[in-house]
Image (cartoon, rainbow, N blue to C red):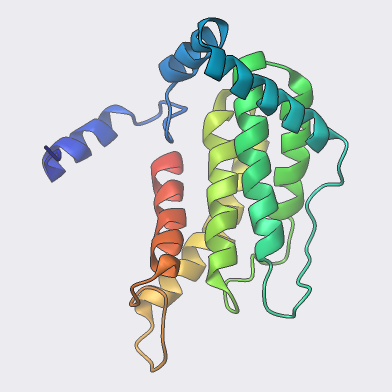
Length: 198
C-alpha cells in the first residue's frame, strides 16, 4: 500500500540535516559496499563503475555549449551522469580523486551565467538534479563555501526560474501543464533540489 501523506512528511522531517538522503542513505551505501564483495552481479557492476569513473578523470570538464542555439541539454546530461558515477564511486571508495574531479564539474556549472531556463527548462531541471546529487551524496566532504556555491546556484539558476513558470498566466504551452516527459523531468529536478537541500 502507498504511504499516507502524513507519513511521508514525518519521514522527511526525521531526515532533516541528515545526508545523504536522495535515493540512498549512508546505511544503504554501506550495504552496497558489502554486496559488492558477495554478489557476482554487484561485483561486475562495481568494476564497470570504476572503469567509467577512471575514464571521466581523463576527460575535459563540462562547459557551456548550446550547439543548436536552443539546448544546453547535452552538457546538463553529462553533468548528471558524472555526478551519479563519481558520487557513487567516491561513496564506495573514499578516493579523493573522484571527489576532486566532481568538484571541478560542479564548480564549472555553478559558474555558468545561466542554466538555460528561459529557452529550455529541461536543461535546467537535469542540471539541478546533477548538482543536487553531488551536494547530497558528498555533503560531509564539501566545505561550507562549496555547499554555499551549490545552494546559491540552485536557488538563482534553478528554483527561482522554475517559480516563474508556475506563476506564469500567459498563453502558450508550458511544461508544468502538459502531460509528457517534460512535466516529470522538470518537476523531478525541482523535487530533487527540495529533498536534497531543505
